[in-house]
Picture (cartoon, rainbow, N blue to C red):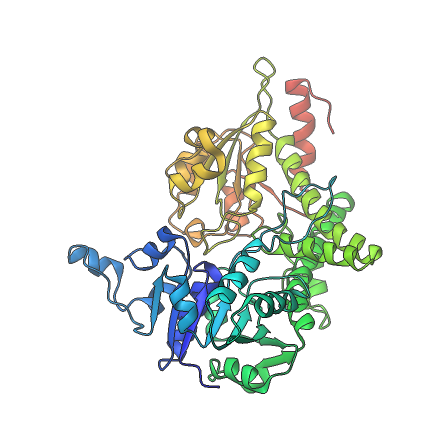
Length: 492
């Protein structure tokens, strides 16, 4: 089967980035990314693409944005001539030899521990399957790249077979994405594996998708059955989430016992069977994938009657949420209360995205932290170097204007505590006047920097008191009795 035209349905993170990288490696294939959202497509066709990802602009454009501005806002020259973005879904589906489904599959309903654990909302997947069935008139390969529960390939194939024209036929393949935001372009250019799930083991269909990855070593393309392929994506994210919850659980043990979590991470990470990755204690995992995929695994286990398995993965999520609550309580613990006005001190938070090198704020632990601090009576000053005001306003609404500031110094002025939540490179800039910033803050001048963006020794010289996740410092024990004497509190 020769692949001449490929259609990606969904111009979001997975669809657009995968299509761009594949287009860069397959100059003889025409790629079209289609989406019903006209604003998203318009952004992809403009000088200002809708996603921030290191390496993306250099791959997509042939000239810098600064040069275009200097020339008077003319269209930026594209590097890739074999990729297009449009809203003409039916036409793109009909023209394609291969169709990648890359639409969102959010968690079904709002998540609450006290309610039923639900799976993924597959409305978008099924709508796309029905659209393909409605317009297809020949043989095509359909590739599910969206995160889906086990058995979804069969469900899509059933829709296609039941509703498609009699002249249409399909191979339906699972090929999940394993992208990490912030390093997605590198991960797509140099993937450590490409998984292809094919129930029928169709040689032509598998060979066709393999042909798009001809630059990859053959041993990195893994062909499995569709159930294994679908579960492998969920399992990969669940294992990452599990490691984060595991090290965070030990951080609580360290704080209560006198051990040092950095020592524990270093010792455990040298064990070859464990390895050093994802062993930094801090806030719980955030973002749109880990939380959702663990919940999906819980739901799958429940549907299969595996209650013990479901309980195990429920504990990973609950530990994650507990860690965030625990950190919130530690921060509040050192905020001086104002009894007359029933308020507490002021906190500066640097970074709103769930990690650096992305503009994604979905399920960012900063959101819960800000909300929890405000509920405790604390004032919050928030600064993120990459997010626009309107992007933050979508999260916090009318409260945004009183929280968001224009820089690090504005955020810290008059604050009692500084939290560096996101490890943006801007926060590690050696020219930041931390000594001056410290002098503008109020006691106890607590610094919580779980990522280690700053060097703690000089920060202590500047007057900051370092709060660590997984370490209880001597100053904490000394400060709390002083605070209780000064403000009439009972020490915890």
